[in-house]
Length: 340
Ligand SMILES: C[S@@+](CC[C@H](N)C(=O)[O-])C[C@H]1O[C@@H](n2cnc3c(N)ncnc32)[C@H](O)[C@@H]1O
Image 1 (cartoon, rainbow, N blue to C red):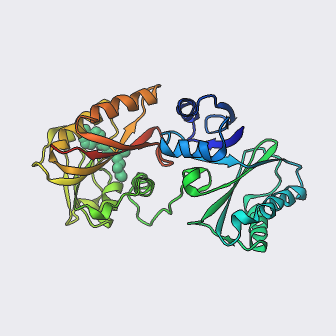
Image 2: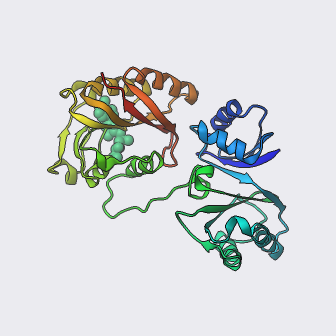
């Protein structure tokens, strides 16, 4: 039996559970933080379960932490001593490697230490055994979840845990003059899907206003055709590499092969979004990439996603479907245009 702490965006844990039930027959589940954090117990071993999840990554699972050790919380310094003991007992796992410590606390946990205090103590323990404490790009992550009664402790790589951020909660710094929070969605998609936006030349941005995605594409060096009946931010509307059409995207068309990237973040119901994206597919080059958000307006998101990817399947292969941390009631699709 192996235990894991699993995390999804708030309210979407039931769908992550539904996906995991299909993936890992016989698994059992227990909610820890309603709607967002739950425990998975599986018959298979740690590596087998993590490999299965990476092979067929669930849309709504944001983060998974194996539980190598569960320590009852005493509520005093002995808790830090026990965590340091875990580090010393597995020195071979950490020594000589860049090691990040991720600590998450369930609200109301009796674990008495703030994240920064516990992290400082564990960084000291890591140095003692010859590991190098690291914040980002770590070789291994020591992940600790303080629940209502136990410290759930596990080590693994960012790939195994599906993220190199605690609980998959990736944070970007807000820039001065940033046009919209929506920009974070495309930034996160770029990282999560390993996109090389700078390899593209001409993008079509559907539902572009106020222009967060357009601004990121400009930063990556692209020319952008932005379509939206709403106003684009003035700094973009007059930009020399932006063509802004203040129109409904269903009412405009472009020449065949005009674009090598399509992005669409229009806030409309999914079937209309899919029709609009399909309407523009002929203006994409074969093999063009597309990043599209699907708004989850109905109660059956998994069914909605199946229907939409099937519709889009006329012109696109779905490479990934993922609810990103910056997606609220939506998911993001990474598509490849099939060509003629
Ligand atoms: C969530 S906002 C997009 C935010 C944008 N990605 C950014 O980074 O600033 C959704 C946009 O979709 C636009 N939209 C909705 N229906 C549309 C349509 N049929 N054609 C073009 N744009 C549409 C709305 O006007 C709105 O500006």
